[in-house]
Structure formats: structure tokens, C-alpha cells
Length: 147
Image (cartoon, rainbow, N blue to C red; front, side, top):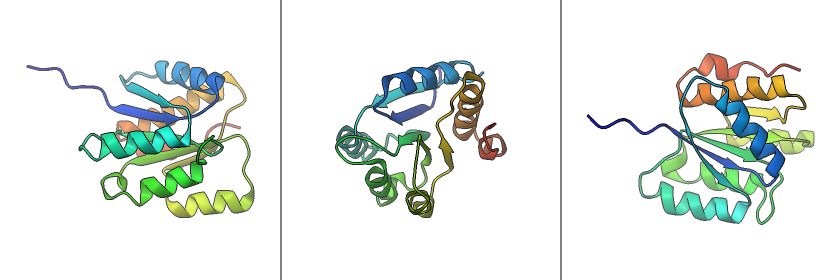
């Protein structure tokens, strides 16, 4: 009997330190996952167009708002306007956002909107929320990360 492939999480983030911390936080969780990292908005749009049109969908897209070559809001609009991706959970992570930017992102529909954690325990809690989105634990995923 073939073993089921773990769910795919697509991370769209340009900061190598944040990518490393996020990967380590996800590794602390009990569930398997496959990680695909894209470092700018242009490669994200290309990847989503090529792979997701073919019927291959990630369980979650983790999106930084401040990216080179198309910002996160543009990528999110593209995700939400692509019929095959409308049901994919999106978690938006940002270091800083204006109230109007935050309101615009939330209006586009995201499963999680959070500030990037500043300490390790909060990164682990964020990892639990993200894995919860992939494995159907919406209550855990919706809980606010510790401050």
C-alpha cells in the first residue's frame, strides 16, 4: 500500500532567517509536512500558476507581505482570484503593516494574520497554528499567538 504524501506548505518569504526559524518551528510539531520556499512575489506567482493549475494544491500558503517583485498583497489577490486556489488556507505573516494594509489583506480572506514572532516560544506556537491549518485543527489555528 503506497504511503500518503505529507501535505505541502508553500512559504513565500524573502528573509532567510525567518525561513529558517519557521522551518524549525514546524519541525517541532508532531505532523509531517513538505515545505516549498519561494523568495519573491514573481516566483510565487509563477509557481502557483504552473503547479496549482495542474491540480496540485498546497494545504497552506504562508505569505510575507513585504516581498521583492510583487508584494504580498498582490500575490494574495492573485491567489484569491484563481478558482483552483480559493479554498487554500493562507496565513499572512508580517513584521509591520499599516492599519489600512492590514484591513485590505483581511478583506481578501486569510485564515491567519499574525505579526512575525520575536521569540522562539512564539515561533513554535505559530508553527502549531500553521500545522493545525493543514491537519484540520481550525480551533488551534485560530487561537491568537502568544504575545
